[in-house]
Length: 295
Figure 1 (cartoon, rainbow, N blue to C red):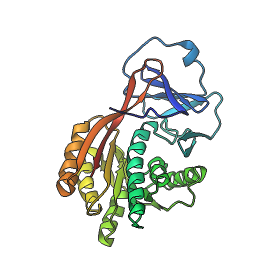
Figure 2 (cartoon, rainbow, N blue to C red):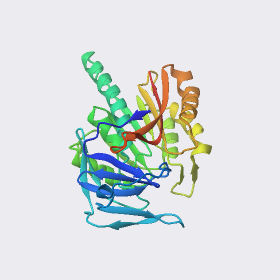
Figure 3 (cartoon, rainbow, N blue to C red):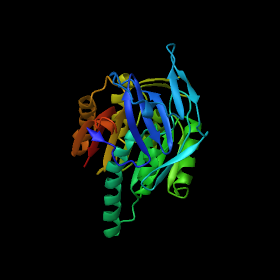
Figure 4 (cartoon, rainbow, N blue to C red):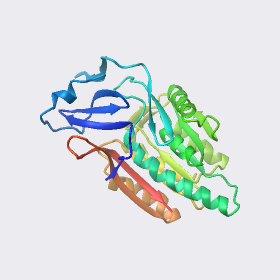
């Protein structure tokens, strides 16, 4: 398992009965998590000091209950700053477990950038971030020297990502901010002949495009990986696929990436669960899976 254990402003304090108790900066939130199927005794001193609690409804969705929580606040990861705010369906605008992937491709980008500079090569390291949400991966790539194309179908998410860039001092970084359907954007990039050193994708389990197009990850992800592989340069740097769908085992990600990337470019694929450490138990909470290809 790849563990995001370099956080200073975030932690999972404890988890039980379908919920995780988290520290986001100086605020404590209690949110549902489908992976937490165990029930353990709760320390009331920890569990009763909440700033916000998301209650899931049996009918689907749910509602926030706030005790003492601002509408927006910030946390930091290394050189990056993220603006958080609770919004529908329990989210805060950040998936902390992805920091383990930020560290991985950030090091690859930094090393490649330094190598090119040393060799007098001014070619930028170009990275495409698809289903890019509020820009965590975009900023992690940019801060390490990449030119990033950030694509998400939600205008609100792209606006939020731009705010995170400003807060991180990356407002002038070479980032293209695009509100677009990811599949249609990739198809247009192929026609335009554009190529990338690295591709990141974090597709939803289920979604709808701007014209009602239905995305189901089990039905669409393989063809999309195949499509995106044609956007890689002749000697690409990395390819990353994230999945929060419990039905997709890490080995399934490896199989698809091997079929569509390794067979074309060689290199190596690794796929693992990603997770976050839990302070009270010393164990790790699984938070999905990632498949990583690198040359």
